[in-house]
Length: 488
Ligand code: SF4
Image (cartoon, rainbow, N blue to C red; front, side, top):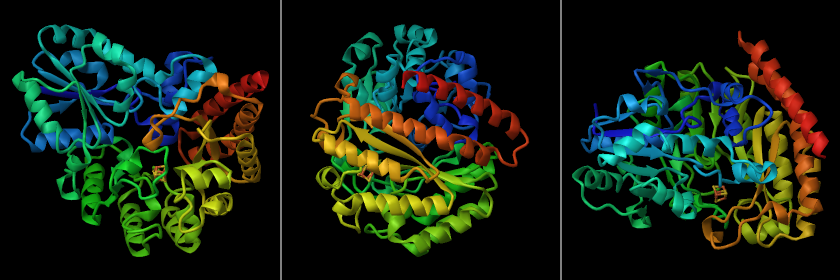
């Protein structure tokens, strides 16, 4: 029995059938598929032994590693097994990603379908766990953190009702030790702790994870140099992990035999090790050669930029060749945001760098074409309802989406959420959608339906259970397609 328990809700404690793309399914609200079957399809629970999950979200593993390094008695438990471990615990640390469904993807779907998304539903289930409630009565402290921590500022009533003791926002390696220590000692802890820039950890202060991360996700760097106005990440300094550090975490995941595959995580994997917006060929190649040599389970990227791909197509093809030795495709999340060069210049002037901001739509076409040719399947985001958006900007975005119809990809329009330097702006709401917004939404849905079968064929190719699961997902996509067409 440990003093400190760490956990996360069911939608985060899943390996999404070893396909991070499927994790997007947690952003949807309950729908025409029975919940038990939907959760099986999109967020099956991670395997656990006596309540200890075989893998956990990477951010939670970093917290665990930091607390272990500082000598805490800590274990990570599955949300379905908390009651078996909570009796002796004095503090519970909860990792969050999008606890109230206020993130761009979930808030857009919630606004359209007027229902709470699954990820918010399961966070509520965790917070209402009777074992936690009972332990609170004897003095258990609850501390929450993770990328979703900012959302608690919008849900003060929830914080009070659930007696959350502390919310930690930001890169917390340098502060969580003292907060957890104070909680264990019964000392005062702040209700809300925003990690300052001064407290942001340097590379050498970030510990290696000590237990496997879901889908073998490993961070290769933090921060981003492009400075988009609407983004939180850019407020933190850019740091790339040395190759040896990444290698250690990959080895840990591989040697555990509990995860297959590897997801390289950074805001722009193409820029690994680079000091500017031009990729570093030697570092990027070395990293990928190492990962492919180590892994049988396939590689994915969390994010990459179209500009970096378009700036060096030869290098991108070389990296693709390395990755495709063992797999048919790989995925990454890509920010297109707008098809308007005027708007791009205003809100994300460096997103196209080393190209000019006004060339943004062309950078997108070029980058997407290169990805298509090299079998990277991007999940692209657009932002709908940016503060300075005009009708002409939406039309430009629709023209761009039209130009991309031959590119194997998903394109998802998301309502503007005030973050980063735009955090004082208003949220974009469903009621503010004009006809052009609606047309853009349906245009993207049609684009995605066009490509979904192709992607399912690629995803399940060569897997023994492939035919069955592929048909199930195709059936789901078919029903969704019919429903959307009815709405259209
Ligand atoms: S490129 Fe992406 S991560 Fe970087 S500042 Fe822009 S939106 Fe944020």
